[in-house]
Structure formats: structure tokens, C-alpha cells
Image 1 (spheres, rainbow, N blue to C red):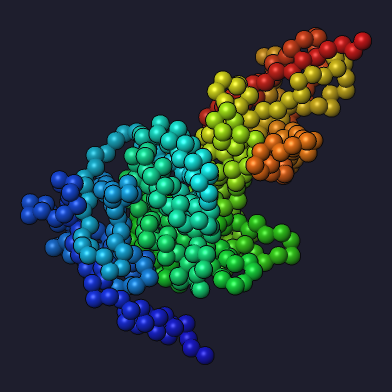
Image 2: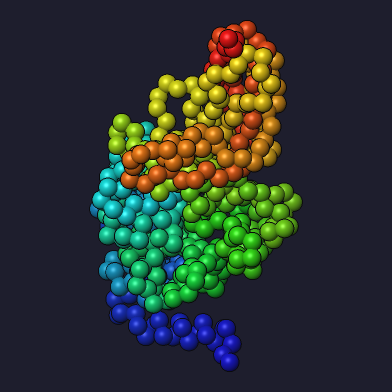
Length: 517
């Protein structure tokens, strides 16, 4: 039996033997004052900038020089420091990395002026486009959705960029980078090589397009650590599991040891850190890896986890039951999908499927705003709602019966699906501008999606290429009983929800009472 440390040593030796002579193992870091990506004689070098191969981390010296042990299986990247930006490549993605064997391993950084507005980040997950039709859907949505977000400093996609068809990457990148902001990508399980023989070779195409699968990126207000937490297991069932590898833990241990704790630390990955397996099934994320990660994160007081994968949306607060032993629960925002429920459902006038997710969340994307002190706010931005409907807003969607018998037993209610809600969210409603009353959080399917399920069931012909998903109990649904002993006619229901920072969000819907003959 070979000890684990010996295995690592043998693996490194084998990798070194395979690295071509031109491997990207040394270079300089400099201020790219003219933005051409080349080090000019008048451009100063930069000391103390971190460069990594995904395992080891070194800092540039006083001459701006750095050197790393070459790896045949991983790009070399600069950890962008706060206060600087990195130029884009021809594909529009930031050129913060170099592939093994690439000529020209210098990194140019451009000074960036501070703003008083704080940091805005666009967070998208699971575009999951695998056919020309789906690529077209995503392209049109990205153009409409991300274009107005040009005040953002950063974009982030949480995996499943494609849907196993990796040749779609160039078209998807063009659509995403049209927003004109730096965009980072984590890999997902649908970004794996279909014919990969092992985990080590499972992201060859992904790395060739998007660069490292594990890296860090620094802004003044926040630090982002992006992790590949999809461990491929070709030939096994399931074919992958959530977890991390020794090289990733080595990177995290080295990087986090010297990181200041004043900024928000955001850890982004594809597979949720909470377990989603059915009872009696193996865990979807290896518990020992999660606990080891959480132990490294525990010293940081300002933390946020971002994940995707589920094509639904929820807030999870980790505690000792999931291996988190910090002073406060650790929030994980499991972000809904840009493709919604896999591009399913009846199409709107623009031809793009409604794709409401199984928990009633509309397809869309999120934004993260971070203040100078590390405080943050999250928002959801639906991409399927029509303009002008007061019952469908960025914060929530309402459902109520259109008509009730006046005087009937009040067994029917208004439902509010608050997309970023959780068990601690305050949600209230009132009728005809009366007194505000608390709504009750319920574990039930969203009635809006149930209506679509019934319409699909009763249809005599296909209503869509793929029908809407079966509605599942939503973790962010509230209900309030509708009064029936009011005057005949229309009555307006208002709902307000308060986010975790005291912000108030409102929506309204109407129902009608009639006297029975």
C-alpha cells in the first residue's frame, strides 16, 4: 500500500515528465498602462502579486518575476488583486490565465479607480444549452438580461454552461461577454468530457475555454474563490459526486492562511454543499470534504456560499448538523437556473419557453451587491415575467382565485412565492388597504405551476416541446386566507415581504366576490 503523500509525489513527477519544454512556469507581473497585454519598457513591474497553478501559490518578487512547478493538467493564473483589472482576450473573457505550454506567461494588470457605489456582481447558473435552439434561447435572454447590468464589476456563472454539448461554448461565451464585464465560470457536471476516462481528464475542454477550474479573484469589497466541486467517476453510478481534491485543499490552505478577514469571502461552486439525496441514497456531496472546507472557512466572519445545479432556488443555513461550527449559521444561496426548468414549458410571444422551475421560481439570474464593510444584498431578476403585471415582480409571484362565492367558508387563500425567502422571512398581506396580517409559510407546491400541470394534463395536443416540470413543495411559499364576507365585487390584495436587510417588496392581485343566485 502506497501512502497518500507518496502518491502525490509520484503524480507530480509523472506530470513534470509530461510537461513540454515550453510549459508556462515563469513570467512577470506588470502594470499594463497602455492595455496592450505586453510589457513595455516604461511599464513598472509589480511585486507581491500571487500566481498559482491551482495547488501551489507564489508571489512575484521585486523584479515582478514569478516561477512555479509546471503542471500538464492545469492552467497557471494570476490572482487578480483588488484595485486592478485584467484585459480581455479575443473571446471577451478575462485573460487571467495561461494554458500549459502557452508562450508568453506574463500577466498585465491595469489600475482601476475605486468607486463609492460598492461592488455589483451578476450571478447566473445553469445556462445548460445543448442544442442550437437552446443556444438561441440563451443568446437572446443574455442580451436582454445582462446588457442593462453594465454597472456590474463582475459576472459569475455557477456551472453547467453547456448541456454535455461542449461545442456550444463559443456561442455561449459570445452571448455572455456581450455584457462587456469580466465574467468568471465554475464547471458543472454537464461540462464534463463525455468520454473522459477519469476525473483528472474530465475538464479538458472546459479548461481550454474558461481556464482554471479552481482559482481566486479579489475586489476591494469581496474575495471570490471559485471551486470545481464535481468529482467525476466515469463508469460508476452516480457518475459524479460533490467534493474536493487534495490539490484544491492545498490551494485553499495556502491562500486562506494569508487572506485578510475584513472583506466578504464568497465561495462559488456548482453542486450544493447541503445534501439533496433521497433517503437511503448516498450523499450528493462527500460529508468529509464539506466539513474540511468548513473548517478552513470558520475563521472568516463574513462568508457567503453560492451554488447551482438544482434548477430550483433556496436559502440554506448551515449549522453543526452539516459540519459548520461557526458563531453564526453559514448562508448558502442555491441559485436558480438561467435555463429555468431545462428550457421547458409553453413559450411566450418571443418563442422562449416559460421554464418556471419546480419550486415556482421563474427562470432568471441574481445580483450580489457588496458594501465596503462586507455587508451584502441579494436580488433575483426573473427573465420570463411580462411587464406591467403587479402580481409578478422581481421579488415574488402571487396567485389567488379569481372568483369566490360571497359568504363562503374562507378556505381559499392568496399564495406568495417569495423567491429569496426562507423560514425567517417576514411576509404580510392586507385586503382593500386594511390592516396588515402575517402570512403563513407553507410547504406546498406553487399553485401557479400546478395550473400549468393541469393544463398540460388536459391538453389534447402538445402545448410545448417539453411540458412544465411537476410542481414540488416550495421552500419559499406563503399563504393567507381570503375573506369572503365583504361586499360583492372586486377586492385588492397587497402582499409585502421584507428581505434580510429590512428592504420592503410589494406585489398585488385582485379577486372578486359574487352572491350565489
